[in-house]
Length: 413
Image (tube, rainbow, N blue to C red):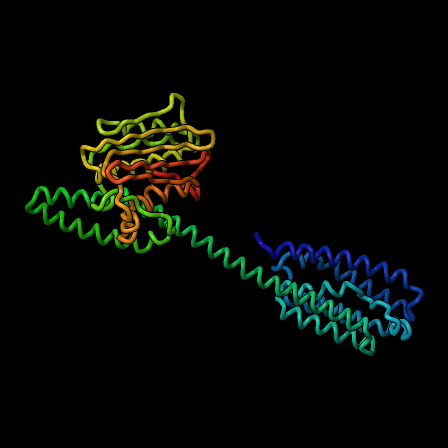
Protein backbone atom coordinates (compact mmCIF):
# COMPACT_ATOMS: atom_id res chain seq x y z
CA UNK A 1 0.00 0.00 0.00
CA UNK A 2 1.53 3.30 -1.14
CA UNK A 3 1.63 6.20 1.29
CA UNK A 4 2.22 8.56 -1.63
CA UNK A 5 -0.94 7.78 -3.61
CA UNK A 6 -3.39 9.45 -1.15
CA UNK A 7 -1.27 12.61 -1.35
CA UNK A 8 -1.70 12.74 -5.13
CA UNK A 9 -5.45 12.31 -4.76
CA UNK A 10 -5.59 15.04 -2.13
CA UNK A 11 -3.58 17.35 -4.42
CA UNK A 12 -6.02 16.77 -7.27
CA UNK A 13 -8.95 17.64 -5.03
CA UNK A 14 -7.13 20.71 -3.70
CA UNK A 15 -6.42 22.04 -7.21
CA UNK A 16 -10.04 21.64 -8.29
CA UNK A 17 -11.48 23.24 -5.15
CA UNK A 18 -9.05 26.16 -5.21
CA UNK A 19 -9.82 26.76 -8.88
CA UNK A 20 -13.50 27.09 -8.02
CA UNK A 21 -12.62 29.43 -5.14
CA UNK A 22 -10.39 31.58 -7.36
CA UNK A 23 -13.09 31.85 -10.04
CA UNK A 24 -15.53 33.05 -7.40
CA UNK A 25 -13.05 35.66 -6.09
CA UNK A 26 -12.39 37.02 -9.58
CA UNK A 27 -16.12 37.10 -10.38
CA UNK A 28 -16.93 39.02 -7.18
CA UNK A 29 -14.07 41.48 -7.79
CA UNK A 30 -14.74 41.88 -11.51
CA UNK A 31 -15.79 45.53 -11.35
CA UNK A 32 -12.87 46.45 -9.09
CA UNK A 33 -10.16 45.39 -11.52
CA UNK A 34 -8.54 48.11 -13.58
CA UNK A 35 -8.49 45.80 -16.61
CA UNK A 36 -11.09 43.11 -15.88
CA UNK A 37 -10.77 41.49 -19.30
CA UNK A 38 -7.15 40.58 -18.46
CA UNK A 39 -8.34 38.83 -15.29
CA UNK A 40 -11.11 37.04 -17.17
CA UNK A 41 -8.69 35.96 -19.93
CA UNK A 42 -6.24 34.52 -17.42
CA UNK A 43 -8.95 32.67 -15.51
CA UNK A 44 -10.28 31.27 -18.78
CA UNK A 45 -6.83 29.99 -19.74
CA UNK A 46 -6.33 28.55 -16.24
CA UNK A 47 -9.71 26.79 -16.38
CA UNK A 48 -8.90 25.23 -19.77
CA UNK A 49 -5.50 24.15 -18.47
CA UNK A 50 -7.11 22.50 -15.46
CA UNK A 51 -9.76 20.79 -17.60
CA UNK A 52 -7.09 19.31 -19.85
CA UNK A 53 -4.63 18.29 -17.16
CA UNK A 54 -6.54 17.57 -13.93
CA UNK A 55 -5.77 13.84 -14.20
CA UNK A 56 -2.04 14.57 -14.32
CA UNK A 57 -1.90 14.89 -10.54
CA UNK A 58 -3.70 11.65 -9.75
CA UNK A 59 -0.54 9.54 -9.89
CA UNK A 60 3.24 10.05 -9.94
CA UNK A 61 3.53 8.47 -13.39
CA UNK A 62 1.23 11.05 -15.00
CA UNK A 63 2.73 14.02 -13.16
CA UNK A 64 5.89 14.61 -15.18
CA UNK A 65 8.54 17.27 -14.65
CA UNK A 66 7.48 19.15 -17.80
CA UNK A 67 3.89 19.30 -16.58
CA UNK A 68 5.01 20.68 -13.21
CA UNK A 69 7.10 23.39 -14.87
CA UNK A 70 4.19 24.54 -17.07
CA UNK A 71 1.83 24.38 -14.09
CA UNK A 72 4.19 26.55 -12.02
CA UNK A 73 4.49 28.91 -14.96
CA UNK A 74 0.71 29.46 -14.85
CA UNK A 75 0.98 30.29 -11.15
CA UNK A 76 3.95 32.66 -11.50
CA UNK A 77 2.51 34.22 -14.68
CA UNK A 78 -0.82 34.83 -12.99
CA UNK A 79 0.87 36.53 -10.04
CA UNK A 80 2.83 38.84 -12.33
CA UNK A 81 -0.22 39.45 -14.55
CA UNK A 82 -1.98 40.88 -11.51
CA UNK A 83 0.15 44.03 -12.04
CA UNK A 84 -1.66 44.55 -15.35
CA UNK A 85 -5.16 43.49 -14.32
CA UNK A 86 -5.42 45.22 -10.96
CA UNK A 87 -4.85 48.79 -9.83
CA UNK A 88 -1.78 49.85 -7.87
CA UNK A 89 -3.91 50.91 -4.94
CA UNK A 90 -5.60 47.52 -4.61
CA UNK A 91 -2.27 45.71 -4.92
CA UNK A 92 -0.73 47.86 -2.16
CA UNK A 93 -3.83 47.21 -0.04
CA UNK A 94 -3.14 43.47 -0.18
CA UNK A 95 -5.78 42.27 -2.64
CA UNK A 96 -5.30 38.63 -3.74
CA UNK A 97 -3.38 37.79 -6.88
CA UNK A 98 -5.18 36.35 -9.86
CA UNK A 99 -4.33 32.67 -9.11
CA UNK A 100 -4.77 33.29 -5.37
CA UNK A 101 -4.43 30.12 -3.28
CA UNK A 102 -4.41 27.91 -6.40
CA UNK A 103 -0.69 28.73 -6.54
CA UNK A 104 -0.01 26.48 -3.55
CA UNK A 105 -1.22 23.47 -5.54
CA UNK A 106 1.49 24.00 -8.15
CA UNK A 107 4.14 24.17 -5.41
CA UNK A 108 2.79 21.09 -3.62
CA UNK A 109 3.02 19.15 -6.87
CA UNK A 110 6.78 19.77 -6.85
CA UNK A 111 6.95 18.72 -3.19
CA UNK A 112 5.18 15.39 -3.71
CA UNK A 113 7.00 14.60 -6.94
CA UNK A 114 10.56 15.57 -6.06
CA UNK A 115 10.75 16.01 -2.31
CA UNK A 116 11.73 19.02 -0.23
CA UNK A 117 14.45 20.26 -2.60
CA UNK A 118 12.06 20.61 -5.52
CA UNK A 119 9.56 22.22 -3.15
CA UNK A 120 12.12 24.78 -2.00
CA UNK A 121 12.92 25.80 -5.59
CA UNK A 122 9.25 26.12 -6.58
CA UNK A 123 8.47 28.08 -3.39
CA UNK A 124 11.34 30.45 -4.10
CA UNK A 125 9.99 31.16 -7.59
CA UNK A 126 6.53 31.91 -6.20
CA UNK A 127 8.00 34.07 -3.43
CA UNK A 128 10.01 36.12 -5.92
CA UNK A 129 6.91 36.63 -8.10
CA UNK A 130 4.88 37.76 -5.06
CA UNK A 131 7.55 40.28 -4.06
CA UNK A 132 7.70 41.68 -7.60
CA UNK A 133 3.88 41.89 -7.72
CA UNK A 134 3.65 43.67 -4.36
CA UNK A 135 6.72 45.83 -5.10
CA UNK A 136 7.71 45.78 -1.44
CA UNK A 137 8.34 43.39 1.47
CA UNK A 138 4.98 43.82 3.14
CA UNK A 139 4.23 41.86 6.30
CA UNK A 140 1.32 39.90 4.86
CA UNK A 141 3.36 39.05 1.75
CA UNK A 142 6.22 37.71 3.86
CA UNK A 143 3.77 35.71 5.96
CA UNK A 144 2.10 34.12 2.96
CA UNK A 145 5.42 33.33 1.31
CA UNK A 146 6.77 31.72 4.47
CA UNK A 147 3.62 29.65 4.96
CA UNK A 148 3.81 28.27 1.43
CA UNK A 149 7.55 27.62 1.75
CA UNK A 150 7.36 25.85 5.12
CA UNK A 151 4.29 23.77 4.15
CA UNK A 152 5.73 22.62 0.82
CA UNK A 153 9.18 21.82 2.21
CA UNK A 154 7.65 19.92 5.15
CA UNK A 155 5.40 17.88 2.87
CA UNK A 156 8.31 17.20 0.54
CA UNK A 157 10.40 15.93 3.44
CA UNK A 158 7.54 13.71 4.68
CA UNK A 159 7.18 12.25 1.19
CA UNK A 160 10.89 11.42 1.06
CA UNK A 161 10.71 9.71 4.45
CA UNK A 162 7.61 7.78 3.39
CA UNK A 163 9.31 6.57 0.21
CA UNK A 164 12.36 5.44 2.15
CA UNK A 165 10.11 3.61 4.62
CA UNK A 166 8.24 1.89 1.80
CA UNK A 167 11.50 0.72 0.24
CA UNK A 168 12.68 -0.59 3.61
CA UNK A 169 9.37 -2.37 4.20
CA UNK A 170 9.39 -3.92 0.74
CA UNK A 171 12.93 -5.16 1.29
CA UNK A 172 11.99 -6.58 4.69
CA UNK A 173 9.02 -8.41 3.18
CA UNK A 174 11.24 -9.87 0.47
CA UNK A 175 13.74 -11.05 3.07
CA UNK A 176 10.96 -12.57 5.17
CA UNK A 177 9.51 -14.42 2.18
CA UNK A 178 12.96 -15.71 1.19
CA UNK A 179 13.66 -16.76 4.77
CA UNK A 180 10.41 -18.72 5.02
CA UNK A 181 11.11 -20.46 1.74
CA UNK A 182 14.62 -21.38 2.89
CA UNK A 183 13.21 -22.72 6.15
CA UNK A 184 10.69 -24.82 4.25
CA UNK A 185 13.46 -26.28 2.08
CA UNK A 186 15.58 -26.93 5.16
CA UNK A 187 12.68 -28.81 6.78
CA UNK A 188 12.38 -31.02 3.71
CA UNK A 189 16.13 -31.66 3.75
CA UNK A 190 16.07 -32.45 7.45
CA UNK A 191 13.09 -34.79 7.14
CA UNK A 192 14.49 -36.71 4.16
CA UNK A 193 18.09 -36.37 3.01
CA UNK A 194 19.77 -35.92 6.40
CA UNK A 195 17.81 -38.78 7.93
CA UNK A 196 18.70 -41.13 5.10
CA UNK A 197 22.39 -40.20 5.30
CA UNK A 198 22.36 -40.76 9.07
CA UNK A 199 20.72 -44.17 8.62
CA UNK A 200 23.27 -45.17 5.94
CA UNK A 201 26.10 -44.15 8.26
CA UNK A 202 24.76 -46.22 11.16
CA UNK A 203 23.91 -49.28 9.09
CA UNK A 204 27.22 -49.16 7.27
CA UNK A 205 29.15 -49.02 10.53
CA UNK A 206 27.11 -51.96 11.86
CA UNK A 207 27.60 -54.12 8.74
CA UNK A 208 31.33 -53.37 8.30
CA UNK A 209 33.52 -54.03 5.29
CA UNK A 210 32.78 -51.99 2.18
CA UNK A 211 29.52 -50.89 3.76
CA UNK A 212 31.52 -49.23 6.54
CA UNK A 213 33.37 -47.11 3.98
CA UNK A 214 30.05 -46.21 2.35
CA UNK A 215 28.68 -45.27 5.78
CA UNK A 216 31.73 -43.12 6.47
CA UNK A 217 31.23 -41.24 3.20
CA UNK A 218 27.53 -40.80 3.97
CA UNK A 219 28.48 -39.41 7.38
CA UNK A 220 30.84 -36.88 5.80
CA UNK A 221 28.15 -35.77 3.38
CA UNK A 222 25.65 -35.47 6.24
CA UNK A 223 28.02 -33.21 8.18
CA UNK A 224 28.71 -31.07 5.11
CA UNK A 225 25.02 -30.73 4.24
CA UNK A 226 24.06 -30.03 7.84
CA UNK A 227 26.72 -27.29 8.04
CA UNK A 228 25.51 -25.74 4.79
CA UNK A 229 21.87 -25.73 5.88
CA UNK A 230 22.60 -24.54 9.42
CA UNK A 231 24.89 -21.75 8.29
CA UNK A 232 22.33 -20.24 5.92
CA UNK A 233 19.03 -21.14 7.52
CA UNK A 234 19.04 -21.72 11.26
CA UNK A 235 20.05 -18.14 12.06
CA UNK A 236 16.96 -16.91 10.24
CA UNK A 237 14.67 -18.97 12.44
CA UNK A 238 15.08 -16.48 15.29
CA UNK A 239 16.75 -16.66 18.64
CA UNK A 240 13.80 -18.46 20.18
CA UNK A 241 13.82 -21.32 17.71
CA UNK A 242 16.02 -23.79 19.59
CA UNK A 243 16.35 -27.30 18.22
CA UNK A 244 14.85 -30.14 20.22
CA UNK A 245 17.52 -32.60 21.27
CA UNK A 246 16.53 -34.56 24.38
CA UNK A 247 19.96 -36.01 25.10
CA UNK A 248 23.62 -35.35 24.55
CA UNK A 249 23.68 -37.85 21.73
CA UNK A 250 22.72 -35.23 19.13
CA UNK A 251 19.75 -34.36 17.00
CA UNK A 252 16.87 -36.56 16.05
CA UNK A 253 18.07 -37.14 12.53
CA UNK A 254 17.00 -40.73 12.58
CA UNK A 255 15.62 -42.63 9.74
CA UNK A 256 12.13 -41.24 9.49
CA UNK A 257 10.37 -43.36 6.97
CA UNK A 258 13.58 -45.21 6.16
CA UNK A 259 13.71 -46.59 9.67
CA UNK A 260 10.48 -48.45 9.30
CA UNK A 261 8.50 -46.18 11.61
CA UNK A 262 4.91 -45.73 10.43
CA UNK A 263 4.31 -42.70 8.29
CA UNK A 264 1.34 -40.36 8.84
CA UNK A 265 -1.48 -40.76 6.37
CA UNK A 266 -1.46 -38.42 3.38
CA UNK A 267 -3.96 -35.55 3.74
CA UNK A 268 -6.83 -35.37 1.26
CA UNK A 269 -6.41 -33.18 -1.80
CA UNK A 270 -7.95 -29.73 -1.77
CA UNK A 271 -8.13 -27.00 0.86
CA UNK A 272 -11.09 -28.39 2.81
CA UNK A 273 -11.01 -29.49 6.45
CA UNK A 274 -9.06 -32.59 7.40
CA UNK A 275 -9.45 -34.82 10.47
CA UNK A 276 -6.18 -34.64 12.40
CA UNK A 277 -6.92 -38.01 14.00
CA UNK A 278 -6.72 -39.73 10.61
CA UNK A 279 -3.23 -38.34 10.01
CA UNK A 280 -1.88 -39.24 13.45
CA UNK A 281 -3.49 -42.65 13.90
CA UNK A 282 -0.84 -44.49 11.79
CA UNK A 283 1.78 -43.53 14.38
CA UNK A 284 0.18 -45.89 16.90
CA UNK A 285 2.22 -49.05 17.40
CA UNK A 286 3.65 -51.19 20.19
CA UNK A 287 5.80 -48.32 21.47
CA UNK A 288 3.36 -45.46 20.82
CA UNK A 289 -0.03 -45.01 22.46
CA UNK A 290 -2.46 -42.79 20.57
CA UNK A 291 -5.39 -41.13 22.37
CA UNK A 292 -8.02 -39.13 20.53
CA UNK A 293 -11.43 -37.50 21.10
CA UNK A 294 -14.53 -39.31 19.95
CA UNK A 295 -15.44 -36.57 17.46
CA UNK A 296 -13.48 -35.41 14.40
CA UNK A 297 -10.71 -32.87 15.07
CA UNK A 298 -10.65 -30.72 11.95
CA UNK A 299 -8.03 -28.34 10.58
CA UNK A 300 -7.37 -27.11 7.04
CA UNK A 301 -5.64 -29.90 5.14
CA UNK A 302 -2.33 -28.07 4.76
CA UNK A 303 -2.21 -27.13 8.45
CA UNK A 304 -3.10 -30.67 9.51
CA UNK A 305 -0.30 -32.04 7.33
CA UNK A 306 2.23 -29.64 8.86
CA UNK A 307 1.08 -30.62 12.36
CA UNK A 308 1.46 -34.31 11.52
CA UNK A 309 4.96 -33.68 10.20
CA UNK A 310 5.88 -31.91 13.44
CA UNK A 311 4.57 -34.88 15.45
CA UNK A 312 6.62 -37.18 13.24
CA UNK A 313 9.78 -35.18 13.99
CA UNK A 314 9.02 -35.31 17.72
CA UNK A 315 8.65 -39.11 17.58
CA UNK A 316 11.97 -39.32 15.71
CA UNK A 317 13.63 -37.63 18.66
CA UNK A 318 11.95 -40.04 21.08
CA UNK A 319 13.11 -43.06 19.09
CA UNK A 320 16.70 -41.85 18.69
CA UNK A 321 17.34 -40.34 22.11
CA UNK A 322 15.02 -42.14 24.52
CA UNK A 323 15.99 -45.55 23.17
CA UNK A 324 14.21 -48.49 21.58
CA UNK A 325 12.54 -49.48 24.86
CA UNK A 326 11.08 -46.02 25.55
CA UNK A 327 7.34 -45.56 25.25
CA UNK A 328 5.63 -42.53 23.76
CA UNK A 329 2.09 -41.20 24.14
CA UNK A 330 0.25 -38.99 21.67
CA UNK A 331 -2.76 -37.08 22.99
CA UNK A 332 -5.04 -35.02 20.71
CA UNK A 333 -7.22 -32.33 22.31
CA UNK A 334 -9.86 -30.31 20.49
CA UNK A 335 -10.16 -26.93 22.20
CA UNK A 336 -12.65 -24.21 21.11
CA UNK A 337 -10.02 -22.11 19.33
CA UNK A 338 -7.09 -24.46 18.82
CA UNK A 339 -6.00 -28.06 18.36
CA UNK A 340 -3.42 -29.27 20.87
CA UNK A 341 -1.30 -32.37 20.32
CA UNK A 342 0.92 -33.54 23.15
CA UNK A 343 3.79 -35.99 22.59
CA UNK A 344 5.20 -37.43 25.84
CA UNK A 345 7.88 -40.05 26.43
CA UNK A 346 9.40 -41.83 29.42
CA UNK A 347 12.99 -41.29 28.31
CA UNK A 348 15.88 -39.65 30.16
CA UNK A 349 14.68 -36.08 29.54
CA UNK A 350 16.67 -33.10 28.33
CA UNK A 351 19.85 -32.12 30.18
CA UNK A 352 19.93 -28.44 31.09
CA UNK A 353 21.53 -26.31 28.38
CA UNK A 354 21.42 -29.08 25.77
CA UNK A 355 18.96 -27.25 23.53
CA UNK A 356 21.20 -24.18 23.28
CA UNK A 357 24.22 -26.37 22.58
CA UNK A 358 22.36 -28.18 19.81
CA UNK A 359 21.39 -24.92 18.18
CA UNK A 360 25.00 -23.77 18.10
CA UNK A 361 25.95 -27.11 16.54
CA UNK A 362 23.47 -26.50 13.71
CA UNK A 363 21.02 -29.31 14.50
CA UNK A 364 17.62 -28.72 12.96
CA UNK A 365 15.19 -31.14 14.58
CA UNK A 366 13.19 -28.50 16.43
CA UNK A 367 14.37 -25.28 14.83
CA UNK A 368 12.77 -26.18 11.51
CA UNK A 369 10.89 -29.50 11.63
CA UNK A 370 8.89 -28.61 14.74
CA UNK A 371 9.15 -24.97 15.82
CA UNK A 372 9.38 -23.69 12.25
CA UNK A 373 6.25 -25.53 11.17
CA UNK A 374 4.23 -24.38 14.17
CA UNK A 375 5.41 -20.81 13.80
CA UNK A 376 4.31 -20.73 10.16
CA UNK A 377 0.86 -21.87 11.30
CA UNK A 378 0.62 -19.13 13.90
CA UNK A 379 0.92 -21.71 16.68
CA UNK A 380 3.54 -22.68 19.21
CA UNK A 381 5.60 -25.61 20.46
CA UNK A 382 6.50 -25.88 24.15
CA UNK A 383 8.77 -28.39 25.90
CA UNK A 384 8.56 -29.57 29.50
CA UNK A 385 11.32 -31.92 30.59
CA UNK A 386 12.67 -33.16 33.90
CA UNK A 387 15.93 -35.13 33.68
CA UNK A 388 15.18 -38.77 34.41
CA UNK A 389 11.40 -38.35 34.03
CA UNK A 390 10.91 -37.93 30.28
CA UNK A 391 9.95 -35.09 27.98
CA UNK A 392 6.60 -33.62 27.00
CA UNK A 393 6.09 -31.59 23.81
CA UNK A 394 2.88 -29.57 23.44
CA UNK A 395 2.03 -28.49 19.88
CA UNK A 396 -0.71 -25.87 19.56
CA UNK A 397 -2.28 -24.92 16.23
CA UNK A 398 -5.05 -22.28 16.04
CA UNK A 399 -8.12 -23.39 14.13
CA UNK A 400 -8.26 -22.01 10.61
CA UNK A 401 -4.46 -21.76 10.45
CA UNK A 402 -2.74 -22.23 7.11
CA UNK A 403 0.98 -22.41 6.33
CA UNK A 404 2.53 -19.03 5.62
CA UNK A 405 2.42 -18.18 1.92
CA UNK A 406 -0.36 -20.69 1.32
CA UNK A 407 2.03 -23.59 0.89
CA UNK A 408 0.80 -27.08 1.40
CA UNK A 409 2.73 -28.93 4.05
CA UNK A 410 4.05 -32.45 3.81
CA UNK A 411 2.76 -35.09 6.14
CA UNK A 412 5.83 -37.25 5.86
CA UNK A 413 8.78 -36.90 8.17
